[in-house]
Image (cartoon, rainbow, N blue to C red; front, side, top):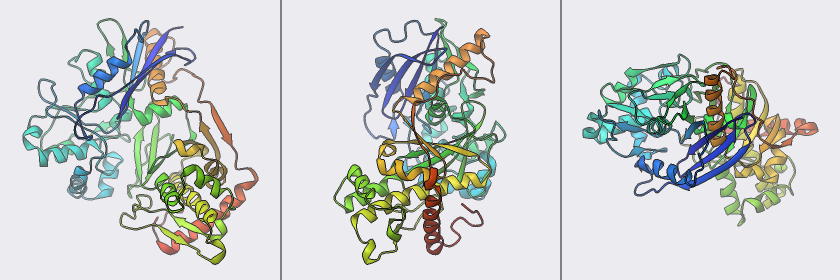
Length: 481
């Protein structure tokens, strides 16, 4: 038995869990917010170190043999030739970079060219896009960039004492816009296209490789992005999908190969185990519920109660929840649609039900994009606070067409980082194989089966699909979702 730690440096805080290497049981944990100041999209990386130190105070890491690092994805840390930041890190989906994304897409010859090159189409959040913004908006800083890292790469490097060797992992690298999960290689030409010159890129490690050892003998694993760490912490595998219910939505699944999607609807990420995580994003999920709740002068709990007073199909009322335009299908300039208004359907409970069904059918469309490409989905893990709503739990299994699991709240990204640390430690000690991570117990979940309601769900989906195809013909092209 030994103990390892996983730290998750999110956009707002650092959370640390200390776990038993054999079982994954959490022994102790720490937390601290980042001391952030100024523009939320410009962050001094030192804030991440300060909160890490505070979260680890009181001897939290005493006896720990290895540490894994998870951190917010898409943060760009640009360094000069001395390893110092040339400006604050660019984090999140910075809207300043939207024009830069369009420039890059055109510069390589369109969305299909990018999808084939690196598995994703540049958007405001991608590091490659932020490099283009930097080159166009802060040229003096851009000219001083000698190397680039992401948040977890930078934290690993700091924990190791800033060695000459700088590392990354395939999960984080796959979201940069200049590393391909399909070929497991960088595209330096895309860095040059964005920044205007070449720059050093970190060495990409395998899932069970260690980034190094501190002078005190503490092993530091490769690290990874929050999405990959959370998937690893949940314990998902082939046949599992994860549906995240935020203001916007996402659907990802474990798959044995990278999916190149010329439409750009699928982002081809790598996971933390050597497999792949194709992801499909929607722009509208819980924001459609909140908008409906505001219209009915209630909150999400009240909306859920109303929805359960209706019946599947909402008395013919169908909501296409494209309130902010939509990414899947690609309808950036459209608006939401409410179809089927009749005297008998114009009741609060039917509108509430239509909002839940519209959100879940839209996510089922995203799931259908993956299924149409051969991705196996037997179970769906439902994440986000809205997953606890009874109306979601009642409708999701029959509309998503699979067993639905709602995990108990836990720090899954930090747990995934700790599991990675245990894996690297076990490989070093000769107790684990590089192809077999530690068999920790998976997440505790509530399980909801579609059962006899599956046929009802298919009818609701057909009703939704008919309205979508009538309103937005060929939105998915030849793809049947």
